[in-house]
Image 1 (cartoon, helix red, strand yellow):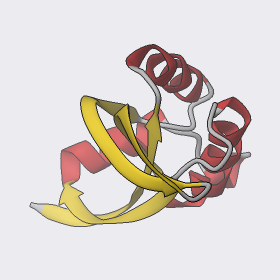
Image 2 (cartoon, one colour):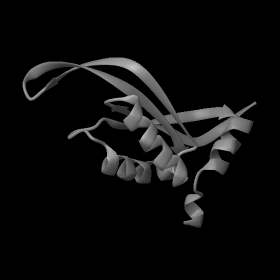
Image 3 (cartoon, one colour):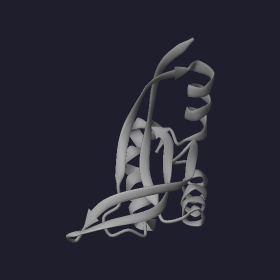
Image 4 (tube, rainbow, N blue to C red):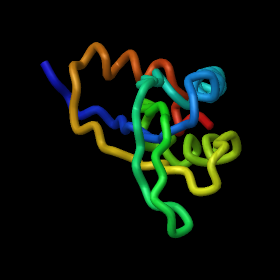
Length: 113
């Protein structure tokens, strides 16, 4: 059975898996994330300072409570090596009840802060 989740993904890209693991460990340790999915081996193509760029990156989906999204983004910004990082908040509309409960239990209850 599904239920409204109260969860979001904070999506970002990083230059390599090592940096991604360090940031994931920090977010988990601070109880700002329930889980961080790291997707290595992406190729990003974009324009930067008037020049077409191609870079190998890793994508990260940070699962957290909706109420913690801004705090996650502030923590991520402090550690992020890019000048203009992509940090996007994506809704998770619903999910299986046992996973949603687990994810909430892994993160700070913003009402208790």
